[in-house]
Amino acid sequence: MSLLAIGTVAFDAIETPFGKTDKILGGAATFIGLAASNYTKKTNIVSVVGEDFPQAHLDMMASHGVNTNGIQIKKGEKTFFWSGKYHNDMNTRDTLDTQLNVLENFDPVIPEEYQDCEFLMLGNLAPAIQKMVIERLHKRPKLIVMDTMNFWMDIAMDELKETLKLVDVLSINDEEARQLSEEYSLVKAAQKIMAMGPKYLVIKKGEHGALLFHKNDVFFAPALPLEEVFDPTGAGDTFAGGFIGYLAQTKDISFENMKRALIHGSALASFSVEKFGTERLVNLTDKEIEERLQQFVDLVQFDIVLENTI
Amino acid sequence: MSLLAIGTVAFDAIETPFGKTDKILGGAATFIGLAASNYTKKTNIVSVVGEDFPQAHLDMMASHGVNTNGIQIKKGEKTFFWSGKYHNDMNTRDTLDTQLNVLENFDPVIPEEYQDCEFLMLGNLAPAIQKMVIERLHKRPKLIVMDTMNFWMDIAMDELKETLKLVDVLSINDEEARQLSEEYSLVKAAQKIMAMGPKYLVIKKGEHGALLFHKNDVFFAPALPLEEVFDPTGAGDTFAGGFIGYLAQTKDISFENMKRALIHGSALASFSVEKFGTERLVNLTDKEIEERLQQFVDLVQFDIVLENTI
Picture (spheres, each protein chain N blue to C red):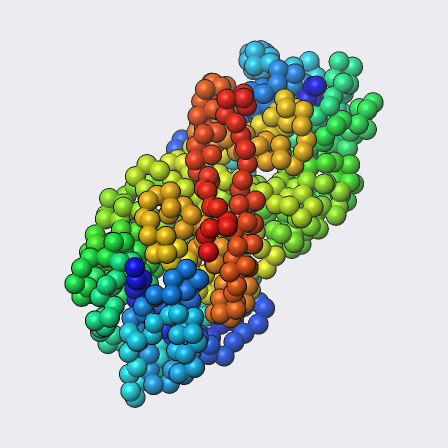
């Protein structure tokens, strides 16, 4: 029951009110793979890096059970680089620099050993490339989860809508849901977006939690109230990796199990933001995850017995 | 086990993207009383209106089991009036007009029949008046809940901090919590505010739900995702009225029961915003509340068995 994740493996340079970093390991597929590795040791990555990308990063990912054989290394080229600065509220950020480098001509190659893919996570990339990956799989996966962002809605809405038709779960944030649907109400937005293809929609609201929609059902996973959000970079990808990793491990794609997957994803994201980049994810124990999950249970658990309340 | 609520009984003129009203019934104590009336028929109101205030409004409140004997009617004076306009996101509003009228010299008189008060709800008013009410009660109530707003933090912070020392629960929104504590993180803000007096702190986040803090415990009550928020006026007061009404009915002020009270308050607030002013609250059945509570249970209920997950 293997999991295939496609997305960037990259360098990030991050500035937050708490400090700044030089080029550190980043990228959607990196966060997805590390998060999912807490659930399954069969996470296959498809991505591309330049020859400036340290072997040590690949070794670290492999040591977490992430299969990096599908990460192309382009001789004479440079790795994708993103630099950004977060403001005090940590909900807004400015992009300081984007260097596409190897991403400019990314042609995703699926190694033969990845073809048994049952769970596919399409990390944020050009929608046309995401679609290409689906088409290059000999057999449709049991579940396809897609992440995307406003950038693609601005410049590639038509391709985005084509890819949307092919996926089971879409994961976007609240502003992106509004942009995609042209509806302010998230309830109305969800209905419109599900009519575009995805049977399930996850709307991420950052520090305000996440909503899961399916038909007329809705589930809400809270975000843990944190003393400090140190660096939000990769939180959404970590969330997605925990979500699909848990589903791949449990092999159950019912709405009930997706609720649990959403809580697991939220728990992992709450760790990710505690340190810069992947630092916290790399040093994460099962015991810590278990304790964090208990905090989520305590956070929302109440016992209203409906016959006796009124 | 009676409940005493102090606050404005007023006229509001409201403009939202969905329409506008002439002067309609409003005021913190009005919403609190109507919300609490779903739980206890012993809600005593202390407030003041002018001679322009229709007897029909008082009769309506009385018909819901709200005791209006403590509402002073000032001959030759006019009722407090507020007019505001909401923008598309419904989270921001502009005050168009505020006429204090009878509130300018409000001297809260506690009728003798109100002195058995066990639960006291201090609706949003000048902190000095809120304090006066506590002092005019012969016996300290079992629980004092206080609402306030940024306006008093701007012009009467010292008095506000004096009143804060005397209350058990403070209910404010996220921006007010940040202003009062000078902390951006709500977790840090909560610890600072609880050090000012209140043992419990409710932070209302509007469409993003509400947090209840007590010592190192935290509970999160979601807001129901709604297709439309028609008019948010009075939602916070309705929430407070449901919260304290439920506590007064159940006579249990444990943290566990406050969680339930928070869900009840959130459920009532979700009705309040469906129509202008008090219109929805006035026509609310027990069956509707029961069904709405079930929606809250469904919204956040998940069953993670912690021994088997990882």
